[in-house]
Each structure stands twice: as structure tokens, then as C-alpha cells.
Image (tube, rainbow, N blue to C red; front, top):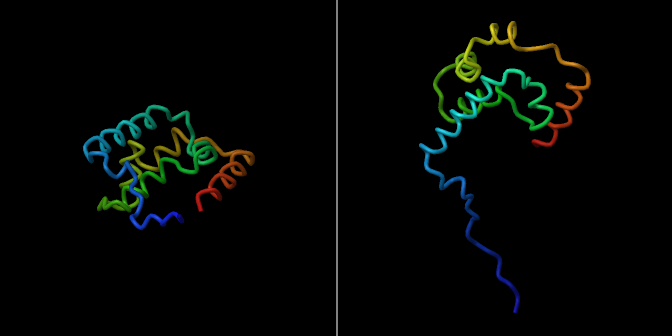
Length: 107
């Protein structure tokens, strides 16, 4: 007997997660990243293929009505210029290379 293909689309259990629970987890993640400013965006990109700026883009994609600068301020907890001046360190070539390789995996 041959196995019939599954015609129902597979569901992702994440889609069943209550929105309030998901929102609370998201806020906890953002607050954690605000506290851990030693985790540089370039390092996050090199390891995971996303960073704080990606989160800002994702909230805009999800319907946040503010502009890019407002979304980044929401995620960073301060304006982009202040973030860069007080938190961001210059990237090394090694970090840039690692980020490029990691982001290529996102496609």
C-alpha cells in the first residue's frame, strides 16, 4: 500500500501560542537586550542572523505604525544616535565576515 501525501498544511504550534504570552515573551527579550548592551548587534548578527534592528523591522512588518527611527528607539530604549554614541563599538573585519556568513543562511 502506498502512503498518501498529507494534503493538510502542517501547523506550527507557535501559531497556537496565546498572543498575550507571545507579547510578554517579546517584551522580556527586548528588555533583556536593552540590559545586555554588551551583546553587540554585529555579534548577534554573526551568531543568529538577526539583531535589535531586525526586531525593529519585524515590529514594523507586523503593523507598528511608527517609522524606522521610532521602531528602533522602541527596541533600543533610546534614539539611534544615542545608541551608537554610547553602546556601539566599531566592528572588526572578523565580525563583519561572520555576520555576512550568518546572514547568508537566512535566505
